Image 1 (cartoon, helix red, strand yellow):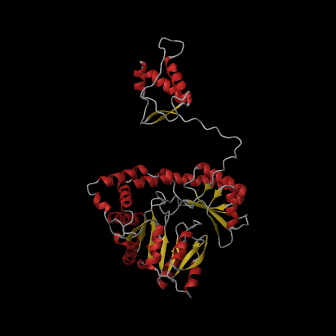
Image 2 (spheres, one colour):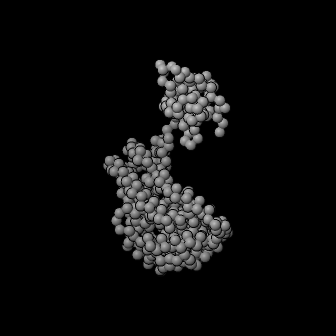
Image 3 (spheres, rainbow, N blue to C red):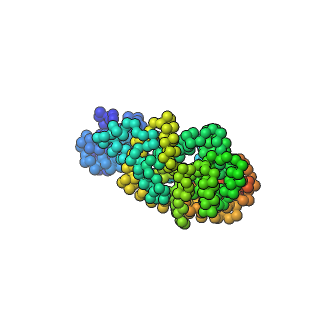
Length: 458
């Protein structure tokens, strides 16, 4: 860093009419005003300046404090003091700045509370280990062995599954799991049933794989299994994709009766059930249902999940549980497109699991999300009959419909855009439109702003 070779300040120590520190401050200010010190120039250190002026360091520190309060200089921690940039005076004749777009996601976590310090420390420790060459080498396409063991243990203890590491394949998020299933376990021309409305990214993945997609309507009890049974009487179904815990986008839970009915159909017609258990970590109240996977015949049960909702969307680590035969097929395809996945991230998350950091983060983030959810629902309730919603027992989104507004999803999206809001809008089989509000990533201020806009929009 370049600092002045000499700092030409002359003060009169005999002049008692002006405090000594103000003489120092005024002289520095004069040098700045005439251009002797320019914006971004570094000042000498307080000790060096005190020696040069033959005054106490306390006097120099007082002068610097005065200039800091005045805004003439700025402090860059651990670097030093610098001449401040001149303030920008806004042009009153210019057009006002555009309003900020309020973007509502479909249920992402709050990335400001991610335990990045622990994750970064785990990364550093990995690269400093004597055996780090093993970490940087190739591993199995199913994922790092110890991480698969930890995931299997987690699924068995917290989600009532009965799996071994051989039943686990680690993926780069749940989206990769859907891709691998579509191409390794199904073939172009096969038929898959999806919820209506359902997860758009899954629909796109299945369509790209050449699968025939049959949508089946969802009501307040989940997908209508009676309709599935009617379809199976005259159509060969190879798979069904479901979000039974928190249906996407409506957040409803598949009822116990329909779960039993679906299990009976699987035994009868022998088709894969792909259960996407996204957001299952966040359960706030009521009975905790076991995954549908636990009731299905092992050869036809596929369970997928992700750490993205628990940590951050950028952390692309997902998991897939299935029979050993299915996992082998998936691994063979995985080895062609992605030899080993993110080995470093897998081991870093493994360290968070073993040290208890992930469990602590889940506990603290759950408390925060409950507060945000309740705040949103309390404000939505003030809109009365304009909106219809349920305070969810889990997950990171609230489903809101607008019963008084006869409008298409496209028109609602346009109305929201006029109010500088972008939100995921869906159409129900009844024709009613709804908004899936991912509340976890919103600030309390954004939640209040959104509800206010909804109040004027509907």
